[in-house]
Image 1 (cartoon, helix red, strand yellow):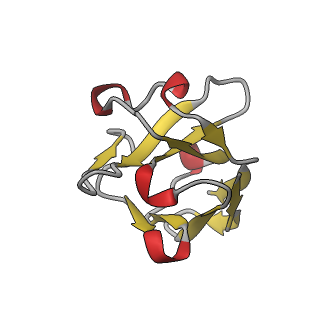
Image 2: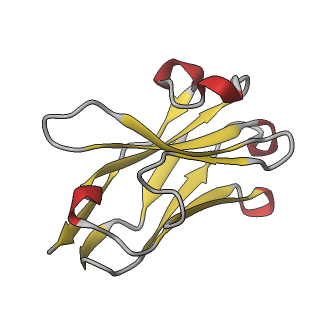
Length: 124
């Protein structure tokens, strides 16, 4: 089970940190992905952190502004979001996959578990 939290309303240029708390599986063994879905749009991959070596991946639209991290001791992953833009407004979901092919990290079917989503709204 995954529980995403930390969303909210923020002005453009501001920051938020999303958390993804995991339970019920061996968190260390799972790659974590963050996805987002804006109204009327497909869910898209935002970032991913590998379970094997901690390597990180980002969508071009967030590169340099977002940072993903994973604390295995706390069974929690994070997405630090800075320099937020109105186009970052979306529901953000975390996901966990045990056998994610990292070349395909943006694909939803690579992940086994999904959180319920947390709303991020960036005002201009």
